[in-house]
Length: 224
Ligand SMILES: Cc1cc2nc3c(=O)[nH]c(=O)nc-3n(C[C@H](O)[C@H](O)[C@H](O)COP(=O)(O)O)c2cc1C
Image (cartoon, rainbow, N blue to C red):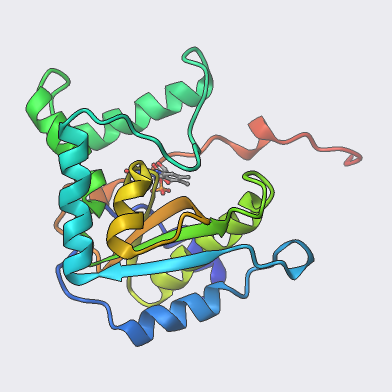
């Protein structure tokens, strides 16, 4: 698969087959993905790759926190924008598309809650990758580099027939992951990636999200 195909095929996968992903394949994916460039080759990323009973315990503990109303306290906040903004409009559009595919009515609180819980359960993926940065780095400096490695992970996964969903929800309760996966306080949890073999029957996996036309976000300078 060439890189353009992988970029075009990648999309967020929110329903997975239960089949395990071999550790050797996950290692190969990380070896490929960490060819990503980084400022001064600083490679400011670290990973916890979690599967099996520990991941199940994390899912359960996340849901317990969520349902107890515990405040979410992510180490890093990635989605924050004004209510009246095009970013918010796109967020609402995404939710509408997912809920329509999943047959979740706007007023159906129970199904909406169940959908939210799904995110906190890593969409039942067999693997969760937690992407971290050392606390000696400032919070913002490594983010560009980490974005590059995260996309590389997702693209390499596609080339191996795997699906991914990059997700904030997985690390909204960082203390859950720290405790159960034994991650020291010195690591900042930046983002998580749910990974596994896509369940092609799962409705939300049909979603191909729209993009704005390039000319709307681009200023062409010096072209005739
Ligand atoms: C930083 C980041 C955080 C995200 N967090 C979540 C999340 O918590 N839950 C979720 O369902 N999707 C999450 N996503 C996936 C986005 O919703 C998705 O990438 C976007 O809608 C575009 O769709 P696509 O990935 O299918 O192209 C996240 C993506 C990124 C890049």
